[in-house]
View (cartoon, rainbow, N blue to C red):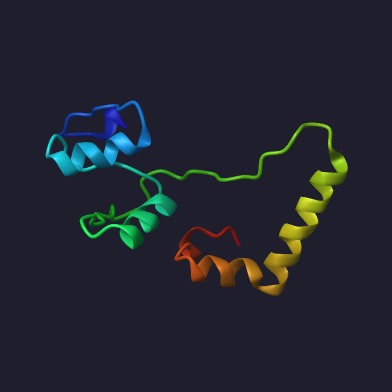
Length: 105
């Protein structure tokens, strides 16, 4: 992030909530976040505004986390994901929550 900034100062804060506090207090003008959290901020606050980059800025891969070695559970998760992708539930639920632009097809 620091290398990409041209006319801004990067501040790293201790907690995610501190980002919003810094902006609301006037100590910061903006904060960077990922797409899902930006949607949540827009849906749950009246002060937040989205400034979108003209192109993809950074890709954040999301994944399921599970204990290593539990092949039965891993297989079940993979089948479930394949099923909801195939029958459209994944995209339908993503759309319902405003997350369809980041669904892996």
